[in-house]
Amino acid sequence: ATPAAAAPAAATPAAAAPAKRHGVLDDLVDQGRGQHGSSTGGGAAVKRHVLLCGWRQEWDIELHRFPERFRDVSCGLVEGSTLTVLSLKPPDEMAQFLRKVGFERRPREGAGSGGDEEAGAHHGSREEGFYYPGLDTEGTTLYPHVGDATLFEDVEPIFHLGRPLDTA
Image 1 (spheres, rainbow, N blue to C red):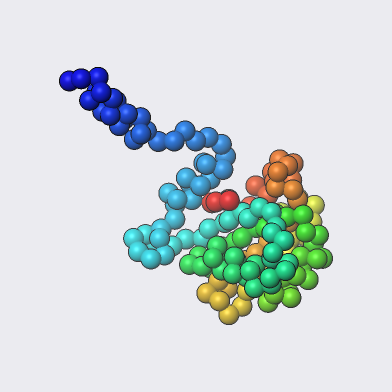
Image 2: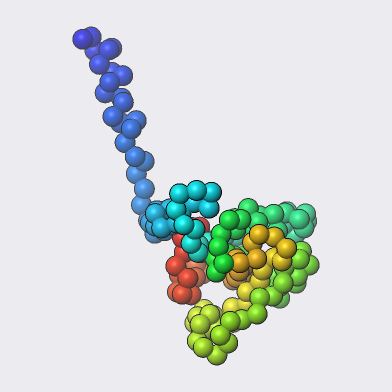
């Protein structure tokens, strides 16, 4: 064999090697992929807990875009799934925006039982959940939180709310 002929064979194993990955986010994504069945076949669907970081200016301008994003992320998720939004939007402004685009406040379940209320208190705020009626996403609760997704000290408390994140 000539050296030119050997070169493609040597490149094949390197191309087949998986990309090097590391970090908590990769672990969470792998965990989510391994635990959740497809809603279109195969395994049984289960709850998912998704973290959405940041806020897009166009969501404030084109009001239909945020509900569409919510639908895209939560479509096919089962009852009890959550979407936690971490952004710099102040809580009152976020609640007003969500109501303006059609979200409704989800009644708290088990108030006084120490569930999300206790976890929200740990985060420094009382967690308010929202849902979007009329879509196939009513089982998914949106939880807005204020913070900078680029700062560990703002993101880290999200991991202590009692909802193991599947993907971000």
